[in-house]
Image 1 (spheres, rainbow, N blue to C red):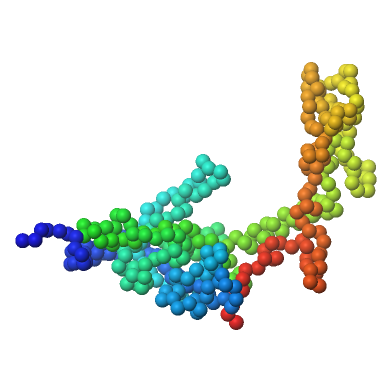
Image 2 (tube, rainbow, N blue to C red):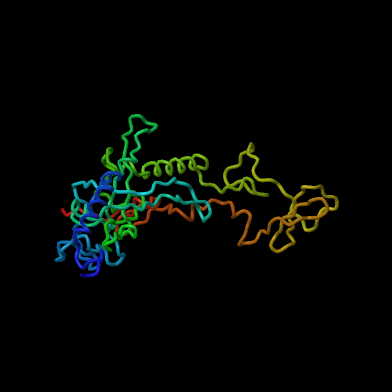
Amino acid sequence: MPRLSLYKTEKTNDYYFMDKTIGEQFLVGGTSFLVHKYIGVEEIHDDDPAIQNPGALDAATKETIIQDLLFLENRDRKYDQDIYDLRGIYNVADNDFDLSQFGFFLTADVLFINFHLNTMVDIMGRKLMPGDVFELPHLRDDLLLDADAPAINKFYIVQDANRASEGFSQTWYPHIWRVKCSPLIDSQEYKDILGTADDSDSLKNMLSRYTKEIEVNDAIVAAAVKENPDNLPDNKHLANAEYPGPWNAEDDWGESIAQVTQFPSSPSTGDYVIRTDFSPARMFEYTGNKWQRRYDNDETNRWEKTTFPAYDYTSNLEDPIIGGDTIEGAEGLSQAIKPRDTDPT
């Protein structure tokens, strides 16, 4: 009589019995995940040797192509027009801000989701892989402040995938596929799913904060222009500052501080003086029984320069002429650098 062993070199009825039972558990207790299947990259009509086009390669699966061999990224991704419905299971956790590191992070914005392996392959034709996108209908936000705003699902992007350690049965064959997901962001890789900003009803306009951030930035610039239309130095609060524009007697411009070569004989608490015999000139404040040093007016740390606006240094106020074309100098980076056009026409 041969020895009993649950492991066999081939998948036996024991394996299929357990696999069917496990798959039933996902069907009964799992939640729905709508999968946007990644199917490769767009054709780019470019003679750049670092760019791989799917039509130029005899690849059995287009998903394995790396579009840009220089940056090792697939910027222009294509997704199947059909949506696949899978059942998955994951542990729900509270989204809390972690303030223990530099900045703050969401501690539960990454999900680890389990899927039944054979059911997944039967429905999609392959296993889930990095680049696939999920919609989570059970996280649909339909209680918005704006009653007319459309409700949208939560979107996640697959970052990594592997066999789950808890998915091995007594036959030593895997039954569960585990994926690591993070929230989807509005970027070039997912424009095939999100659509374009020109369409007001597109997912891009619903999920992205780009339009609102541009609106905030424009409002800040407009407020700054109104506050200082002539772009004058902000030195009104500085000691002995000279008014940079036409004199207006109503303006209390700059506090007048005595410039001396020796300290006064009978100072009062809170008095300021600037000793010009120091090199560099030094500002002192009298505090009770001593003259306390406040600032040194040197070239590397002038009290005037520390508060001057840096607009002249960070923005190009001129319109340069390059190749006979006039280029607007003060232009946003988003307008100067455009994404690569992937339209095959």
